[in-house]
Image (cartoon, rainbow, N blue to C red; front, side, top):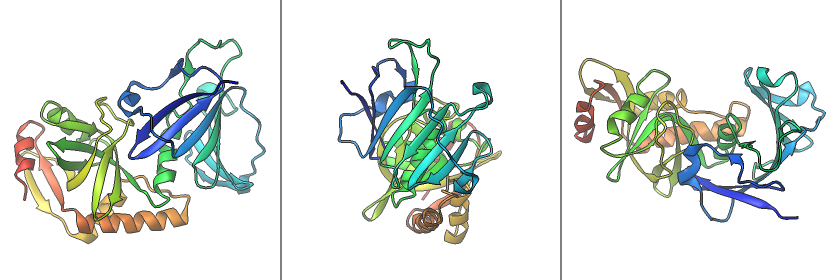
Length: 292
């Protein structure tokens, strides 16, 4: 039987999706286009389309419930993600089963019996599973993902961190013709030797321009709307807390949380961090370029 494969790379982690069905009809979001590659995969996922199996899961096996659209169980040495949606009815529309290190998995996606082999198929790693899986992989000693806009300004890596409404998408739109926008909402940070690198992801917000680029992280700015551009250098203790409140910590995993806390502390000791009061116009670009 022919096995079909899609391969893409995010933050130097290579994912391969295989399926017995033709993969050409799979609706991978447009943002993934720059991330496709031919590298050897680190993470291999087999996608099944049709019925979702009834896996017996007990309440005591549940390690996290988002109280929105996904839950994580640990049963029989496996990590089981259960995805639900009010529109899909009372049963899960998808179940993903991964091994202990999240490097091998199977995803079962429910589709109507009427869907043919040439019809459009949903991305098995659609939201929120793609991002949750990335968080789990990063928490195993690889790095963090943070609410932020990343900018590659001719090799200068600027990270603009903030929660909702803080101005990340505004920053992306202001810089879009001046530099490379990695992403306006989700950036991965990893340690590479003696420095930290940031990487674009396909998990964007309101601004859809993304790039798979990775580059050294030079400065971190915490965004605040203001009537004038201004910066304040922050202490390491304060910035560690600010990074934690803007990243995606693995709350369900004590070892992963220990790693994340230590990573954030190392990051803020190594990379200069500032509060950035900014005016939402292009004046902030030259202002940031001049920050010492």
